[in-house]
Each structure stands twice: as C-alpha cells, then as structure tokens.
Length: 287
Ligand code: A3P
Image (cartoon, helix red, strand yellow):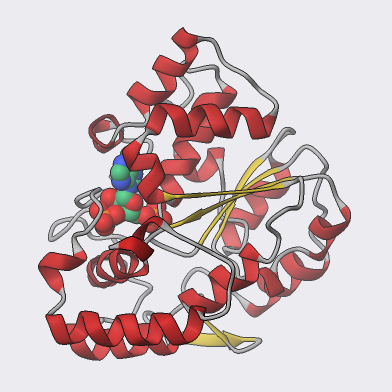
C-alpha cells in the first residue's frame, strides 16, 4: 500500500490517502454550497500559502484560528479520504482545498455560485519543489534521479497528472465571475496588493489593520514557525521532515540552481509546444 499508485480516469493517485470510491464520491455526489470557497492548485504551487491567506482574510487578520487549528481542518483537501469527511462536516462558509484537475472536480460546483481561487506557479519551480517533496512525502514514490523525474513530470506521469493539462483546464474558466486566478510570483512580489485583489473577488474588503494582520501572518517566516501550517503535526508515516521541509525555500527561481541548461531548454521546448496558441501570459514567460 505504501507508495502504490492507482489510476482514476487516467490520473495517478497514491493509495495511502486516496481511494477510487472517494474520488467518485467527490466527483458525482459531493454537494457544493453557494458560499463555498475553493483553493485550487496544481500541487506545489502555493496551496498552503493561499489557504493561510484565505483563513486570515476570513478572520479579518486575526491569527488566533490559524494558530490553533491545523490547516487541513480549516481548508481540507476534499479529494483525500480524510479531507472529504472534514469538508462534509465543516460548517459554512467552508474553505476547501483541492489539487484535482477540472474534469474530476465536483460536478455540483458547475451549477453553483461557489468561488474558485486558482494559484499558478512557474512549472520549473513547481517541478523542483515537487522533486524535494516527493523525497519526504511517504505516499509518493521516491523520485530517483532528477533527470528521470523531470521526464516523468513533463509527460504528466506523476500524481495529479500533467501540469500543462491542469493549468489549461482550469484557466478555461477565465472570465467567469466565480473564478479568480493569481500566480505564486505575484504573491511573492506584492503580497499586500494580492491580498487586496483577493478580498475584492471575495467581496470582503479589509481595513488597513486587518490587511497588516493577513500579510504578517502569511509570510514565509511566520508560516514556518506556525505548527498549524508547517506540517510538524503531520504523522511521520506521512511526512518525514528530517531531511527537507514542507516549507522548504519559499522563493521564485530556485530552478536556476537545480536544472542544467539542457534540462531547462528541453523544459522550454515542451512548454512552448504545450502552451502554444493559448491567450495566456504568465510572469515567467518573460524570463
Ligand atoms: P518550495 O518547495 O519551493 O519552498 P504547496 O502548498 O502547493 O504544496 O506548495 C508548497 C510550496 O509553497 C513550497 O515551495 C513552499 O515553501 C511554498 N510556500 C508555502 N508558504 C509560502 C509562503 N508564505 N511564502 C512563500 N512560499 C511559500
């Protein structure tokens, strides 16, 4: 069971924390409520960061809840076996996290007024972050050599499938009034301004003091010290942070330290092939 994957509609999931039955339930039976807020990402794109930001916006910058309730209870990953139970039993308004590609998302969402915030990150940094994460997250297979793992990532042969498909799928909702997207790089560059934009989308404006509270408590340093979001409470059989941390570096452009020129150029070539013809521009396109 450890490190074993199963396929659900062509996408790999680790058996230790997901099940076919749970995924079927999420897709077909989960009842989305109009006041649900979904924090959606391809893995390693800033999920827990956005979760913290959304929790803090909800509490108007007051960190009490973020310092006492684990993030997986505040914004459960509803496609996991445990997260589904938590999401079902949490009171409204619910915050729910997800890495699901759009075609596996709860069908009832598409008939609801629930909101989705989609965070996208430079896929080279996503890859590097995932490479380190796969070494400490027990449900995942050992990534092996970086070059070999890179090939798997670019082919979409990793849990949650292809980054390209995920992004193209979700970004198809651009222009819908209940869909908002932002990049990890924008959060890095201007956290306060990004939080203001998020508040506007949620229809929850904050005063300057509340904004200060959000920005302060969602910083990398504050989150790294907060047991409720640094995963130090996660059981060792799931996450072993003795070698590396979940909140590892928290920077943009770490790929430059980890990929060779040839690997980076190959990545660029596949990126261009996959993203061509799309009317999308990201901060990393200019790099
Ligand atoms: P690195 O491995 O590059 O450090 P996810 O939550 O989607 O799994 O993404 C995890 C990545 O987001 C990790 O990237 C982590 O350090 C980064 N991250 C989490 N909180 C952050 C914050 N407050 N500021 C910057 N980066 C953050």
